[in-house]
Image (cartoon, rainbow, N blue to C red; front, side, top):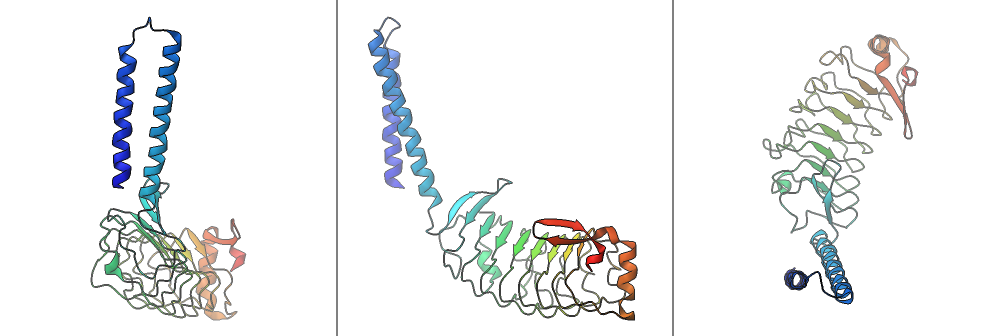
Length: 285
């Protein structure tokens, strides 16, 4: 970056000299002189523009394999997709708010390794090799709002797996191999609005699983192995506005009485996804 800064200083000095030359000529100067100076000024502006592009590229590539930009809400973002990282690379700006590491080689999720990012809002570790989420010792990432762990190697989630990030609003765990949950898996996530458990191997829903989630609005349970919904399962949050329950082997027995009654009362809240198309369809259950 030092050579770039030197070049910028030289160009700025040249541009200043150009402007001074313009001001030294009166309106009576010959047309040819005006044309020459105009050409010089255009050339100077073009040089500054090219240098701007060079600086932007240098900044964006400060960490090989990553690219800095802004997300749709203008949050600072580092996109390190598919770069072969096994851990967070050194050199990332600590004020970064969005970290994208999908399709890398992370084999652990260390909450403390992200602690240096003091304004972190979103972490994306989709399609890595993380086998486990260990509970943190307190709110290590108190500002983290979005966590993406889809398509990893998760098979089980401990009690309080996400206590390290109590401000989570969106949690994506789709396309793993999760077989079981507990009543306290999601304890401490009182702000969570979206929970995606699509395409796992869940067969039993813990009776009190939703109790720590009073703010839940969208729940994806599609394509699992769920046969029964416990009585009163929605008692803590009676109405979940967006509920996805299709592609489960629901048992045709009296044990489904609670689910039937719930669907009768809230059938407009049950949705199904067909590719990019989302539609209300209580019969999908």
